[in-house]
Image (tube, rainbow, N blue to C red; front, side, top):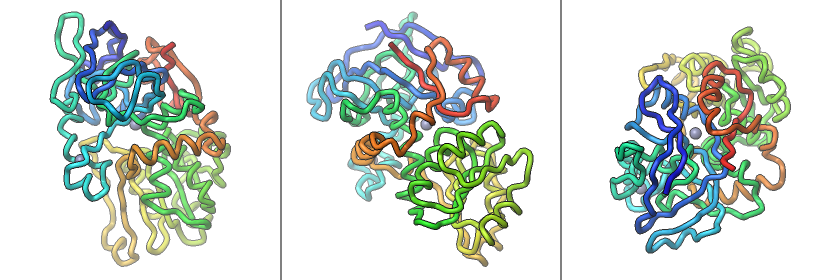
Length: 369
Ligand SMILES: [Zn+2]
Ligand SMILES: [Zn+2]
């Protein structure tokens, strides 16, 4: 069938909005119509070549929609199901999956970076008949696509699909980093660097965990209002003020947790000096491949400070995403505040450039219908 998609053909160049030919799903795969797709900072990192992937690919990995058809042997989803796409598909067999670490599955990782289905092939071709790859398994910026069934999480139909697309990436990464990886407890002193989609969800999850104080740090003064809306007790604009002495004063000596969600080495280097004794940096943002942060390990060891990292918040996608969808219906996630606006697919390059210039204050979501 003919579909519309945003194709990343060359890093540093705009997305090419094209009509592609999509094959029918093979065994173990489903054909999905995406209804909403969020634009994530990792998409921008791919576009700018800061994180490289095999090209050309259909961009996007934060998507929710409806199953239209299924291939042979599919049991997890059926036509009509509302689903969230996931950019990591645990194989269930590799050493990591067997240890409960499906978020860092090595069994399917080759297919993730090479942009194929689990049999090593693609279902997408361009107008010249050349293969186009599936970005992050789910090809989020396409009107329809084929996904291995393990990359689809069925959800209840009362969850709005524009909210649900954020369940692919920024919500599970943010919430699970706070609850599962860091284990923030009431009264812990917490700061968050970088109020993009993941940072905003870290902030909200830490608020619901009763972190206090809860300090938001961002280069853009314009993010002060969303920080306060999501529950920050303080906001520091670190392009104007040095957050280190301010955080030391606000916390009476230092943080228990410094969440780094901006993906910049400078934020890690700042955060190190704001930790209290035995404090932890949770590095969640993904830096460009060639960047390095300098950290004073002598001081870190003598004060028992540590740096932890987490990919996808350590989620078990099939268990955690439905729970987070249910939780979203309480209103506590404030997803309506996190979504700043919607756009059409032909406006994707404009959204990407506005994100690069840090002009976006919240998540922008592509509406397909
Ligand atoms: Zn695996
Ligand atoms: Zn993402």
